Length: 118
Image (tube, rainbow, N blue to C red; front, top):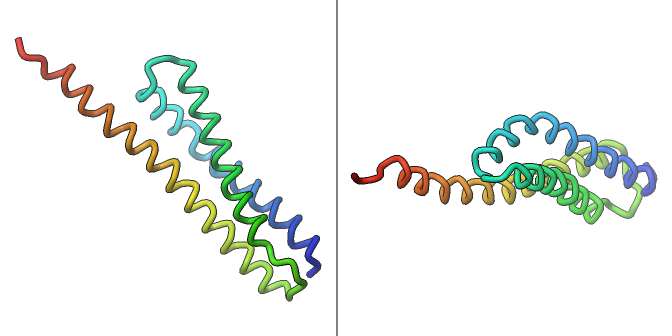
């Protein structure tokens, strides 16, 4: 398999899986962001930011670690899948960590609102 074919298949596979994962998560993400954000425009911004991170981070990792020498198809596919899975794991870890911190900050604020002493 040529280096150009490996690079093109890496880019396409990364973009395809990123968009597929974002499409699968978009409704749940929008609901979570709607609860965290107090203004409607914030939700749209963070939704787009998350999509951008889910596209850019995996694409950067896959392109950076694409081998520049011809290899057999099995090794190329194995390397491609490993790069895509690792890059998505890292992107989800970063986005998930940010969302987790936001949820943890919001929960104590909501408890204070609910448990007001009279």
